[in-house]
Image (cartoon, rainbow, N blue to C red; front, side, top):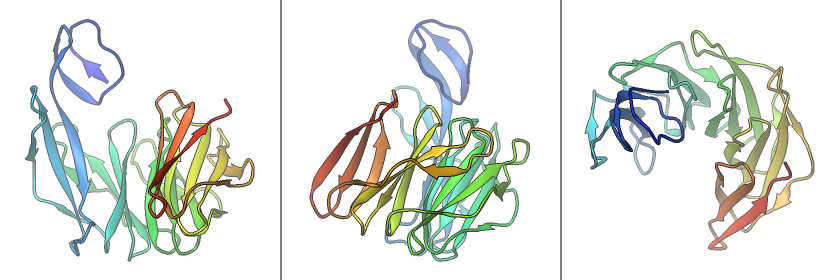
Length: 239
C-alpha cells in the first residue's frame, strides 16, 4: 500500500513515503536467499533506497534458516516471508518488521515433502504452496492472517516429475508447477474456500529440463525456461 500525496500512480507497492508527480521517495525491501554455490543457511535482508539509483544497503545481519535455503516468497501484505530449506525438508517462517524490514522467526520450520525447492503465495495471502523435487508433489498450506504461521490444509497433490518451480496466477485461481525431469508443466485450480489444489487437465509439454516459470501481470500468458533446450516455452491461459 502506498501512502502519501501525488498523482499518476499505478500499481501497488508495500512502501510508505512522499509522492510527488510520478516520483516515489520511499524505502522498499528485498530479501536474498543465499543458496547458489553457498553452504550458508541464511536469508540476507537488504534495503532498496529508491531515490533514483535503486542501490541496495544491508539493513541488518543475515538471519538463520534451515539447511540449504533455496526458494523464497513474501506474502502480498508484506508482513511475512517463507523460505524452503532444500536439505532440511522444511519451510522457515518469518515476520517482517514494518519499520526496518528485519526478519524475525515466528515459529519452528514446518515439514514439507523431500527436497523442497520453491514456495509461492496466492495473491490473497491466504495460501502457500511448496514444491517437493524428490517426491514430485506440492504441499498445500493455509496462512494464519494474524501470525503468518503455515498450517497444512490437506494431503500433498501429485505434480510433474522433479517439480522445481511453481507460480500462482494474478487472479488467485490457478497454479502452475514445472517438472524438471518430465519436461512438463502441471496445471491446477485453487479452491477459493480451502486453498486445496485440483488438477484441471494433464500436464502440458515444455522443453527439456524446464527450470523457471513466470506469469504476466494480466494473467493471460505463461513463460517457462528450458535449461537444456535453450528455449522459452510460451502459453496462453484460458480465462
